[in-house]
Image (cartoon, rainbow, N blue to C red; front, side, top):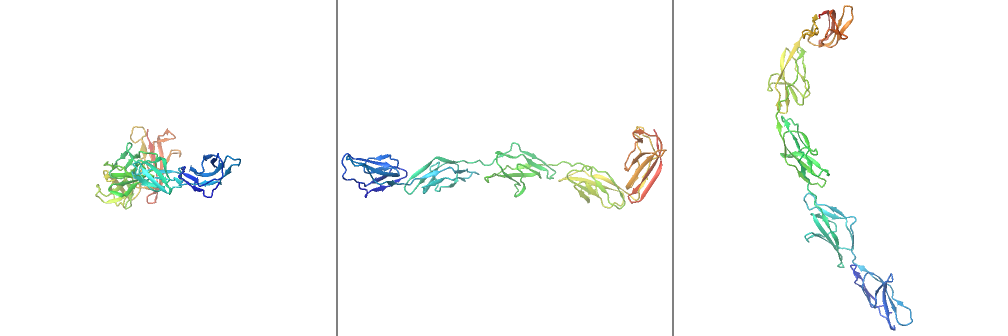
Length: 427
């Protein structure tokens, strides 16, 4: 067997197109047996030339009709050039979003290929790189080729999904009116159709799109009457705008200020306190209209007068937004000294007339103590409240007869005072 002229042609593209030729033999007697074997002793051909062979290792076995043993050629290797392989275990699909062609296919691993061709569902070339982006929704097929002309298509095709744009659900929308343009309006329960996603919210007025008025998810509150738009962005940075939503304004007459008059020393200020103040602004004016001079204002319901030189009437109004209540007159009395007036009898018989004993103080006191004693010197009543009203009982028992009262304290001018006298309880 002569192997000096042996010629090896490699296989390509994983096909059986390799060969080993040029081996000759001499002095062989018939009958001849020629067998090409691979590394596993599997036969692949019965001639001196091996053709249509896959890549692998082969040798030729020759046995003639004589008594000589089988002879073998050396081992020859046919290489398989142009084998293309791919791995999709790390494949990543990026869907198309925001009604744009921004889908992608990445993560495919390929060996052996030098050319990549992506075709869309219409048969048009969509890209020529292994990782591809800028894809619209639909199917895509990847074809691979190499320098040997080997080709491979990955089947089944890759499909890019189109995610829908964010959408609003207006079915639960609630709009709350502003009142008196005071900024108490609200929009609530505007939701997104897909509640499984996370969104960022901005609210603005169409007249001033760059002037944000809130970022509540589905709501804004404490807004003035007007039109508002919600701008919502999802995790893919897709942005949608809601319909223009209008908060109406309702004019309601605010409640009258609940306030009583005051007493103050001459040429000193008085403090006026609103009972159960409401949200808004209270104004103290020197006349019965809102065009009068404003002497003080307060959101808490506590107003301070200027120095009061004489008895006079001031006015208190309440404003909420651009609505206002009617004016309420407030009478302020002044005093130069403190005087205490004490009744010397009363009739607690339940007829609705003179049923309680109470003192009257002209002016103000810093401290006062009122006590009543019976004829034996036992105290039957006491109080530190100048506005007290005694019903003529002690320990729940009705009293009658003559008693002694003692009233002492410190007046507004820090002068002590003391009064003592008799009191009759007539039943």
